[in-house]
Length: 259
Image (cartoon, rainbow, N blue to C red; front, top):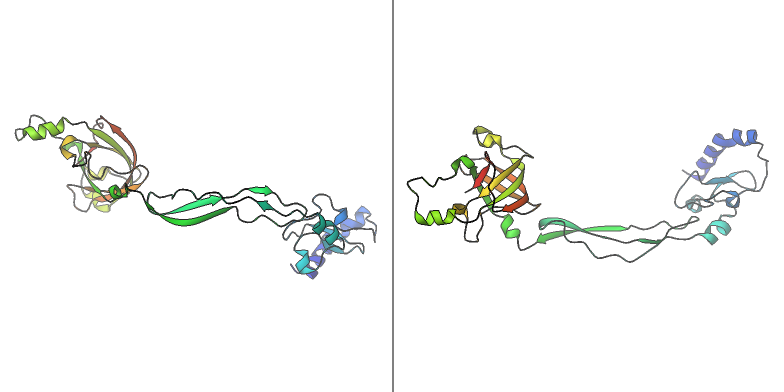
């Protein structure tokens, strides 16, 4: 508030209190007579005192702009002021996103805190944008095709061929996903109707679904959102985040398989 407004507010709020307390009119005052802190940084209307003329005056740094500083402000506050000092900036952090738009941060520490109305500390943290381009980002572009585990093939099926049997002998692995998005078309079929947002599901990579790179397409990235579609229900698709991958395992019943 302006200097005049600050003075009026001060007189209205504490004039009666000074009379009741027996504060002597014309007593010496100013920043010297304030208890710690004698001086305040920035703008602080509570950082006030009575001047030698019993008029309100201020010991905050803002008083230099409003020209309502106590008479001893320069001698008390500017002479003893300790301005904030900070150290050098640290290194930028890694991009928060392995793939796509993210951010980096860097920080610095306070070496000398401000005292007696000294200049406050500058920003201690900086952030800037970045774009993750990890080599595994190509995997994030893959879209997984899934079916319920009721589609698992049986060794007794008459159409089995030797080369298919060899694939089924390969080690299997399981991937635990948390569903982040499920399309409305998934509600149109009994098995996809079980897919719900934030639900955890287990998807098994069987030998016949393993591709050239020795894994199932679209098996995801840890802590990164990737995409999936239903191989039998048109329009049923969504996204998920891989939470874990376990080698040589089988998902429990009523789970899903990669196609």
